[in-house]
Image (cartoon, one colour):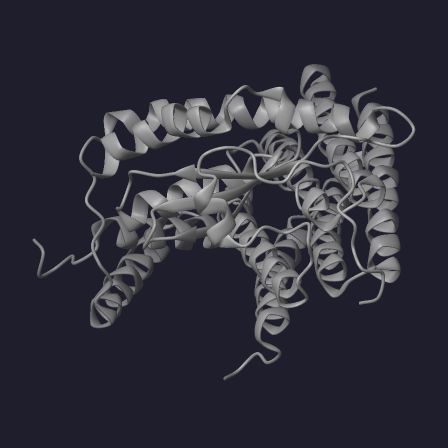
Length: 136
Length: 161
Length: 93
């Protein structure tokens, strides 16, 4: 890390904080992926890594290279914009695919759209365990 | 103006992307500008519907709200993931009747809801104007439909409709 | 001093990201259903991208940025193709 020797202390501390925060949030999201017990709950956990996890590491990297090279290095912004735009799209597609598959198999925990429409505007399925069929 | 630059926002963001990737030099500025012009003309062959922005000034307000909400729900979801031996949260599907019809506004709403940890956009049927979202922790708010409608939909309707 | 701080921070965050990738790998192999595996693969892509960015900070080279961008692009395309496959059973129809 000899290239970082002449970095001012405050910048090093800030970069370190952002890096650890970002990777920590990504790790928490991945732990959620393991611990939560149904697919629809697990959909929520990778967004921890893609919002503030990615954001922290990208900010840290931007700050680090800007200080090292003595000019604003902003190309990490491209990754940030790209990740913010694409993650919701993939998660939406995946959730809809899962919903479609569950409805095809008549999984009782997943509401049909007409059932939702009839009971409009409030919670449709409550339950701590969405019983999933075990085979894939 | 519309003949030369059919999609000014698209052209500007393409130019910005080119300069970010290649570094700022006068040569790259020229090349990027040419590429952005040609690409936005090609885009007009696809004839996408043009989103109309009514009020620019509210976009900053919306971004601020989303920024803070994502931070807050990051903390909330992290707490759920770490809490207890077996995370037992009451999660469920919530149906929300929407008033917004503008496709761009709906796309923005979908991105906001899905990229906020804790809520995910699942299904929308334009025939019924009804949206189905999945919420990780249902009990943390009194009414999710009020939250979505007052916090995001009203602002998005101000911007796009 | 600042080099030591940064070295430690980069090492810690690389360990975190490796653990995160392991968690995603567990879900990828465990399933139980195909959509869980695709979700885990998407999260794995994000972990790999962030890992490359931390390697860039460790070596002080901006070359890793391009690789991270390519991984982000590929992750999006592959996950949306897989989601489409789950829905219809075929990608091109």
